[in-house]
Structure formats: C-alpha cells, structure tokens
Amino acid sequence: MDAMRLEHFRSLLLSQLPQHNEHIRNDQAAALELSDDGVKDSSDLSMMDVNKELALRLGERESQMVADIDQALLRIKEGSYGICARCGKQIDERRLEALPIARYCADCQAAIEAASGEDVTSTL
Ligand SMILES: [Zn+2]
Image 1 (cartoon, protein in one colour):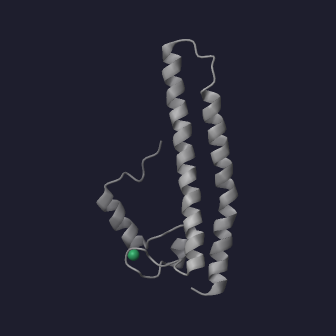
Image 2 (cartoon, rainbow, N blue to C red):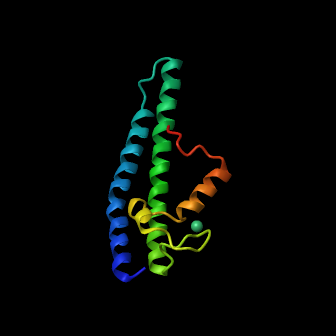
Image 3 (tube, rainbow, N blue to C red):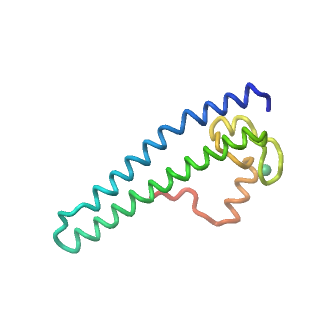
C-alpha cells in the first residue's frame, strides 16, 4: 500500500479514537452511578447488578476497540498494515475502508469466526 493510502487509513483510525475513549468514559461513569447506594430490596439489587455488568461489558468492548485501533496504527508504522495476518495476502481496501482495524482478509475472518463458533451477531 502506498504512503498516501496508509496516511488515509491512519487518519481514519485516529479519527475514531476520541469517540471510543468518550464511550469508555461514559460507560464507566454509568457503571459507577449504578453502583451508587439507594438500593432498597434484593430485586432492585440484582437489577442493579445486571445494569452494572452491562455497562462494564460495554466499556470492555470499547476498550477492545481502542486496543484494536492502537494495533492497527502500530501495523501502519511497521509496514504490515493491510496485510492479512493469517494468509499474508493484501486485504481488500474496500474492507479496510469499512473496517480500518481489520487484521484479516474477509475469507480468513469468515474461517476464523466459523472455527471459533462464536456467535458474532450476538448483542448484549
Ligand atoms: Zn487472509
């Protein structure tokens, strides 16, 4: 990938960082708020735990996004950006455009997801 394209993806990644950091802050604030007192009976308490758990898990997901972005930026620096970490082929730029943190080409991603058996469509 030429320097111009790399720079394009670099700024794309950088532009996504602040919003994720913002999400993390919000999620953590929400989690802290939910752990506040004011809980009377045990049913409230369990509901509170569920909400807190949810907020923390959202925070984890955002933290993971930030880590993924960091790693992508590192790959740009090292010159391995846009190359599939599994098969070593060039990742389609349209894929990178939609998912700048992509580490694998579409084929490998599908194979990995199929192998892991993870329900990638599951939401919280
Ligand atoms: Zn691949």
